[in-house]
Image (cartoon, rainbow, N blue to C red; front, side):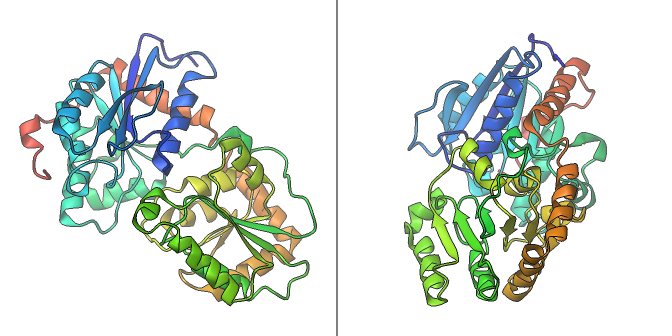
Length: 393
């Protein structure tokens, strides 16, 4: 489908070489918009959010906005206003000001319509976070979320009109699809992503202390670099703590750590070589998980704690839900999946069916259709004036 090369799209987000999930998401989305079935936009430019420490970035980045800098913010808004429409990626921690309130100033300065993608929709926000979310949804022409849970929260708890919300799945690289690459006698269990507190890795490590009788003995690989924010504050002390926990439990033959930040191709090969994926996250707020989407896209059984996105997707039978902070229940779920080939096969089939429309070319097409539709139909919704959008400032 061709959306018309006469339209231009501006985006504001973190972006590589910044290492974070939103940066990776935005880079994949941009790539999906410039390859495939014809040009979806004639011009795409990214205003990249930075802390001022990193400046290097080539196309499609057109400006590095130093968050918290008013002059830089005005320049960013002026550049974005040269496009037909703007996509704003939102997470509370990536903009300047308390709770990232700078994003409201940016959107109020734009002379063109904008859609906001909410990577977090809190069920119990602070009053200030609630004000920011309310204002974001008012300023935006459309609100994009990546799960039905997030959509329901916006409607039920924030009072957003359902007709203004688009649920567009988090994309997965097509390289995650394809035949399984599982090899060798020992089953491989995998957790990947940026490492830091709140991932529940301590519980996963303890779970494997209850699986030492399995033969062949499973391997548990924790793959991923330490989150940059964690590394900035405490170096590698968190990872060293996990390694010490592994040794104290005598699990050196079972648990491995790989601190590399893998390329997308290398990560896809690793996930496809895995028997089971474990997501032992501790947060009950997570309405979007790119790791979960990629695991399902690779047709891998997933064992996860009941964070919202996992509850929504794994109800299809593509995996198992275990309670937060319960290593015995986690071990029990892993034991059943690792010991029963029929269970693994059924979960893999359910995952494959679920992920049919999640690959980036399809997701990019849906996003492009929505954004171009806003411009072409000139929806009657009118954004309030900036003067009425200072409540959260």
